[in-house]
Image 1: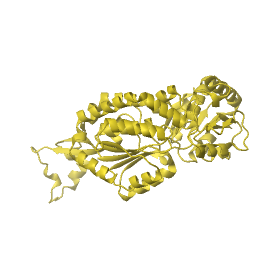
Image 2 (image 1 turned 60 degrees about the vertical axis):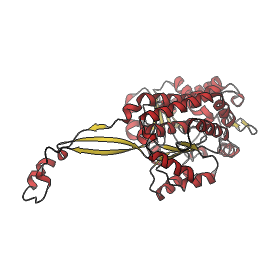
Image 3 (image 1 turned 30 degrees about the vertical axis):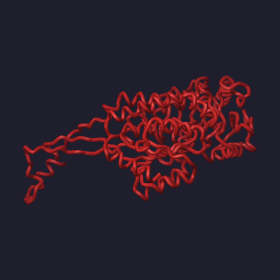
Image 4 (image 1 turned 180 degrees about the vertical axis):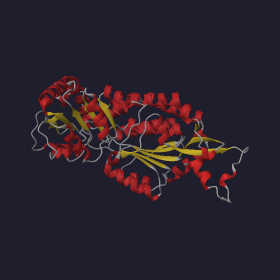
Length: 453
């Protein structure tokens, strides 16, 4: 791997990857390779996570195509030097911002959306002009193998390459010198990544997670809220970093919301969800056992179905959850949904802000005052009003966390910005040279104050 990194560095220094046409050609090669292996990707996602073909395309493959399309359409505009306003202190001059790629970047991706959470950062890295080493998750081996095949067919290893393996491979990569590291995963590994990056002063983007609240206020459309919450929570069997982690619902509508949610669980997945072809599975036995332990001894108002052989857990609703419930002590990352009633929205706000800042927040309301109140008073990575999940499906919006839920963002032009250094240039005129800045300064303090105050 050290030899490959050095080879990539030499290739980057030739300047080929910076060429706009080369970048576009690379994105087209990636798209063609994905198209060639589309059926294999769908099968791999089913083998790893039990995803249906529709869900695989909706949440993974389709998002990759959309990101490539968006980038090809806009890469010329995004990459142009940007002329900015000149200050009086620099008169006469022209000021520009040039975006330049970092160099050789490391992209470490997770297992829950193993295809799109690898490819979308890669699209940004390529569009910015970098060379890339990709490290997909060892927990989703079938998808990682297809990613390796796609990249090997589309690129020379001096431009983009894939490193497979487990913890030892991660350790070796993190001890290597990269120009940028983009990591998506859990907080524990994220801290290790940041620690290792600090040794070489390598800049990082950390896409982590957290307990994302879903607030349902009494003016909400309860029927539609229930449908959208059920879809967003139990998509990919709850293994989504921005899934609603718990519900905070006004007491007066709590029972109605629960009733509607149960109705939509049955509508989406049938009376026995773990038998549904549209319902995914838990990634492995380790996470399956962890999730089972979160609901042992809990009072479920719905669910509790398990399949130990297939690592399947049906949707579970905890209607009498409190802030002390076991499932409220960590990010759930599975099909368990605690539901907490509230009477006072300001108390809800205080409870959320007393905890680590969440990656996402969802609010169901038709009251614009409440909408403004929540957005103003609670810090979170991003979210939706009257929906779940969908804010990450837009190439026009930055996606990322804040505080313990992550740092930095990407998608669309924000990906290109993430994988680029913004270089400031002042182009000064030779016609006029204002003598005021030069010594001897004499008694010109009053004059400089007039210019700069």
